[in-house]
Length: 516
Image (spheres, rainbow, N blue to C red):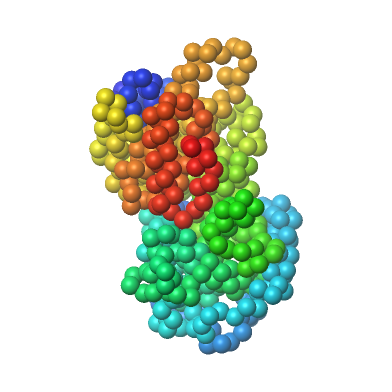
């Protein structure tokens, strides 16, 4: 890895020169101003966790804190005892709600239909109530532990304060819907991993869970959704944060079930019958978008760090859906949200904007803006997120992927998203179309894109404790895997796909078929 000057850009060499790592070279005509420092109708947003200490419910004012529900008490819609707000909606919030209104109404209709379905009235296997701790049901205790130890880091990849690991479990003790969403995601994820399956049932942390099945995820989900009906009446910040976090957790569950529906049609389902899924799927994206666009969320965004953490996780979820399903992000991703955000979250927002350009805008003007913004973010990211060890792949000894070590999952995620955004802008450059571009230039671009994918693979393989790194690698492989024709490289990529399948509980059907 070489440096030339003080400014750096991610760059890759031709494959024939060997597998290189992220090399720096001088960038020209870089605007020193922040890429997100645009004029805005919204006040600057503070970075969550930097200007406010995260408080647990035990340190907050008990007069404003939501109280636990007594055992066996019927769940009541949130906000019934909340006084109406006297704060008028801003023009931005009103316009945003109009934009999201149609999709959100569809989500509410799905909620009504799900609650009226026979599945909505199926009782849980145990009478335990999540309003009180400690949990009395070993199965629910295992689901709670699995979320904290195995899943929360997926949500906290770009969050230095680790809200979903440290704050959400505390809030879940007071907000049943949040607890049920934790149970739902853990049940779905835990029952997919082969390493926990035994003839007697799921075995986790020495606890045999013979009654745990993927059906429990559906039952828990249906217990969550009534809380979304009345979010617009809620003015209590902690309650609203919990609702947004609940929706974000349930959307992560959607990432599994969406592809399982396709597997049902192809006969590759993991055992979840269509009869145990809600007939009308709830659109959690529409719910998240509507809640975030509401006047209450807009007014609380700068002061409530869990809302900020949930928003950035929702944006990363949109990046996942956008790249895997090849459609533009639907969530609000205005530049105003990047003002004052951490460098990692600025890269997240930039990647989401690139995805929106790729599958929606496609204009030359927006490409130029994103290219300039990306170059500046790369320069800043290389200064902040330098790898502490790099070694090129030794092709003579059969190595295909470089060795690149970073010190944290935050650095891994930031640099991988940076590479993905650059890869898309390079491969889809609107100025290279037509006969004016030589074949040599196209070969050069393909070589650089291939090298970026190899770098993504190297980073993910070097960080096995960060399974989401394999997900980001899959983005590039799905988009531009057909750039690889060398049989040794394709065999190596097939090995990455196998690790992708083993390390996470998300379907990998598309990648498996690409590198058969």
